[in-house]
Amino acid sequence: MTEYTNIPQYPEPYWRDSVKLEGYPKLDKTIDTDVGIVGGGITGITAAYLLAKQNVRVVLIDAGEVLNGTTGHTTAKITAQHGLIYNELIEHFGEEKASMYYKANLEALEFITKMIKKHDIDCDFKKEDAFLFTNSDSYLSKLELEDKAYSRLKIPGEMVQNMPLNLSMKSAIVMKDQAQYHPLKYLKALLNDAVKNGAQVFENTTATDIEYNKHPAIITRDGQRVTCRYVIQASHYPFYDGQGFYPTRMYADRSYVLAIKSDKQYPGGMYINAEDPTRSIRSTTNNGEDLWLIGGDSHKTGQGKPTIEHYNALEEFAKREIGITEYANRWSAQDLITLDKVPYIGPTTAKQESVFVATGFRKWGMTNGTLAARMITDSILNGSNEYQELFSPSRFQADPSVRKFSSINADVAKHLIKGKLEYTNDIVSDLKVDEATITRIDGNRAGVYKDKQEKLYMVDTTCTHLGCEVEWNSGDRTWDCPCHGSRFSYTGDVIEGPAKKPLKKIKND
Image (tube, rainbow, N blue to C red; front, side, top):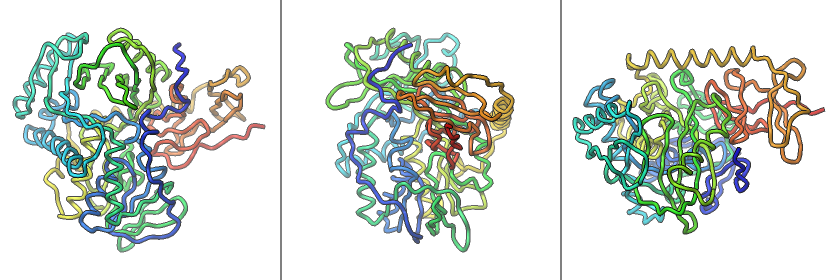
């Protein structure tokens, strides 16, 4: 197994140290505002920026630090090329709505470009062509159908037999004039502008519920309230379900990234394959050095083979296709995928028009997250948005939603039962440093991790969301839920929702 000697235990994106954020206080009082936003990522910060520009009173809260969640742990393509999607959208939604999906994401790209120019933001913005390629004979026909969908929807693109990157491939579709950027540098500028225009920001403030009186109120873990006219849930996974049944209508997916150096010069462009396992290639600059970003190998969170093996698979691909001279870093990202692959953006339920949700971006958060902020702020300021029917969280397409709904929830039930009945008899005394095991303590399923100082951390493995049993993530040293994607540190603390409470700690007697 590869030894990543220069990689931190809990991998952070290498660029975080280069972006110093302001630091904001914890909410310690009840506060009244026009719009309460939960989540300091791309959707929350863009929405705060847009609303504050219109003199709307805005309060943004985040469970941790702003820009330290999914947005801060992601590669930054800004593109309307979202894999094999447009032919599928035509089949399930029709040509008009498929065209709207493209238009909405293209407008998000144009909005980001406009903001960068308007505020003169130094964020490594670069125009790049986006290539969707295949090295599989069975996917050639799918790529051809996607090319025909491009033509029907008048998407500028074409089939090509060669790419700037010399990579094993049989054919590709290119979408011209897409882009990439440094998301933290960009969003820091928008956040600073929002604050200058009156937006208030509070960090380390966890939202746990919404209560209604005349208007909705966000309730925090510490019992504080943010009373407001509108709530925007921009927290990646909705902290408030409101009987929208979101855990049954989407699933969590993890993917991985290696940042490497190579003797080869990066030829430009952004690349992703059509088949599984996914392989994504692009470049970025860190402290003046060019790095290759090799991503993919996605799977349902908490399921499948040991997660360190996904990093190993990316390493083998990079060695074979590119060549590696040095490892700069690695990290993983979590994405939520809806029943029909289209994000849920709009009122949380049809009867709760003042509480908005933005989730299910399916790995394309830069455009979909920006789109969500623009749609929701448009609805608040103007009462409607032209894309609201397409992205409505209340929609339910008969095909493929019924089959996907059944598949997701059968999978959840399988893992719920499996975890409860699983026989575990691993002996804690056999643990080596930096390893974990699942065992039984006083008859109950427990997870035990031994750190490099040989200290043991023991937790009850029952997820505090809906009671599934978490599994060990050896790649990131976390406990991950295979049912709905909650993630916990080896000490049991919540890293990612929908869980709101930490795993129960077991005393080490």
